[in-house]
Image 1 (cartoon, rainbow, N blue to C red):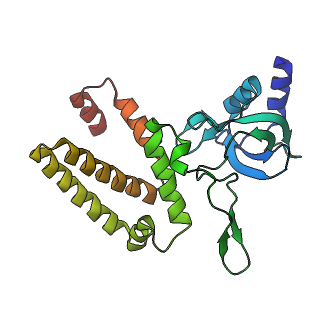
Image 2: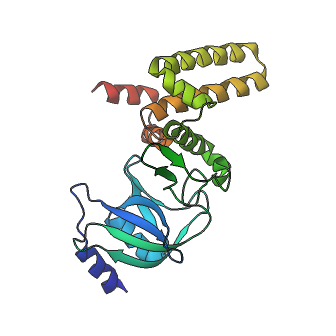
Image 3: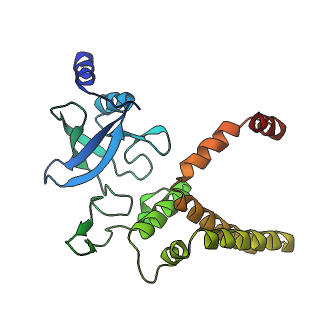
Length: 235
């Protein structure tokens, strides 16, 4: 088994960043589900576990498909193209492949004149994630609204109005959070902090910065005193 794994890696050509694209396809129907990237470690872990592992370029870390949602991909077959720089994995998809709650990520169709969105999410996008990952779920919903505008969407209206409006709302919500904190009503604090978090997620969405980038920065600072952290930034 080790020889088989080594042999596959020897056939693959990773780019300068150590990555190659990987297309996930439904093993039974042939439907294309998603495209992601793998590094050598993700390939090894996919082979070792039989479940699809990928590498997130935005988070700069490896992840297993479905590790938060339970919507894992059981790998049934692995192919690579003639150049060895693209993988095709045929999978048994548990639940939905797309973070929007749809079976496939390829639900937007260009009909020659406009974009048509096929079908509604089969499950609530937020329900895909465990409660602890609600910030990630909200971020993905925000990005979906941004890419697929809806007339009555608050998120779409904020992106249409632009960065200055988003920043203004963050300032407004921060002030209201401070006022709630001063007032001492716990329910009001919860409500205002939730509003503040949501509008900060809009800012992250504007710059296409997933919450994991913030988590990573907090992990970097963990165990450092505030004085040490500030001194490190000043260098």
